[in-house]
Length: 280
Image (tube, rainbow, N blue to C red; front, side):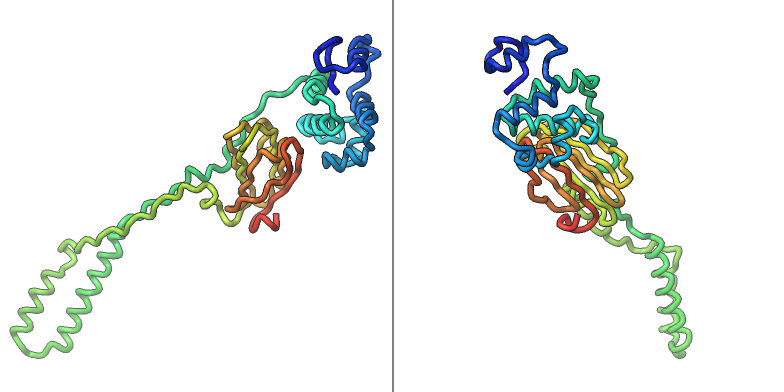
């Protein structure tokens, strides 16, 4: 079922009659979804089970009350899921919602809170101060040993003087081979800090509307994640996600890839915290 113009391909006679009605007599978006559900022989509970949209929200949408959806992004996802469940074309319904609620906002770029790919280990430099201190300790120890236990042998005294002069702090200490530098990691998850929660989303198999909030409820991102793109988020305690096309999003949490949280076209809400993803 779809909302179209009279005589457009794929419209049923009933839809053509609905489109031909004057604007003030056309069914509202919620009434249209409700009638489509009834025509499909489905109950609200069955639609809720198929879409995972809670029963009270389904009732509210069918009464044109979208305030319980939690925002325009969620409302669009619910409308799309309900339309598919009752056999209606979701695109014109979402377009009608946008027209009646101020249009679709432009996607905003995610704040660069955490880009683990750019983290590089610091270079380790030779510790010349420690080398110099070690040389001084060796010289002082050798002189003390010679003074208190070297005896009256003149030849030993001369040799000691020569060795002392050669080991003087003014002489340059032998340079040590610098330790090999560790190879920088290229894995964005391997560099995730253990005292934070880090989530990386990768669109694989299609586009998906996503939103991410930190533990205070502040939006970190809201917009379309295009196929092949990725976004990474981090917070001290918790990250709340909404995935508009859950089956097309790969999720990496705190260094581990987790199982998909839904099917293609499903709207899912998940939260993750620090530690093992199974405990998020």
